Image 1 (cartoon, rainbow, N blue to C red):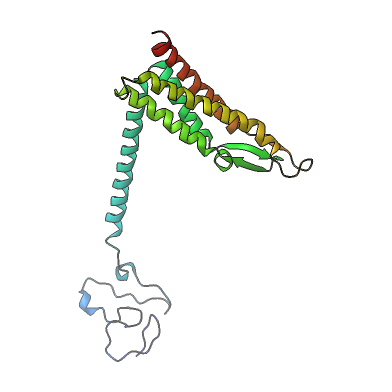
Image 2 (image 1 turned 90 degrees about the vertical axis):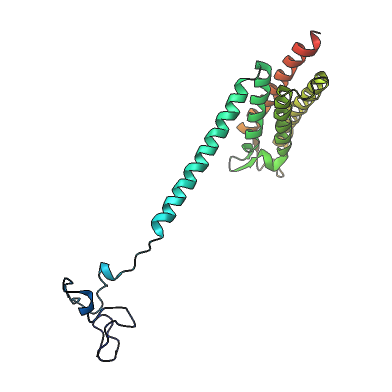
Length: 220
């Protein structure tokens, strides 16, 4: 005998095709089962013959729960950072905000060659600004928690020095990157918005450090 589904040769009396799992003899399924033959040997098996992946729903549910948990963690972390930022004095807010901007803008385009090729700050030494920004933020928050209370003025000198380095570094990049094109006269280099914004952020850090020095050291 041949299977009506795949036309493979089978032994007489076979109830289920061993090649395509088509049920040839459906008598064992009960009296309520409707025995409907496929219109064509290549017809697909009916929905009741198709196995169902019972693990798909729990897996999707677990992914949804995990995504929700990660989202909540990120939101709570951002709220905590914002809450701590609001507790800072204005000079510290200026320094921390400028540091965050300087860190971010290091990944922006710093130079554009003939308006075709753009180079990010991180590719031309801008990683230094991220280090300086991270150091400024760490100093600002550690001062709020009472660290270096006895030697706070020296810490402020360090913070001011870091800010000064950031200003001088970004300023030097604004002058040097425009002259770094290997083929003068053929290609031109233009300073990107990322470098300009990074410079303004470094100025904000220096302003915050100067105000802190004026408030905590120079007035005493």
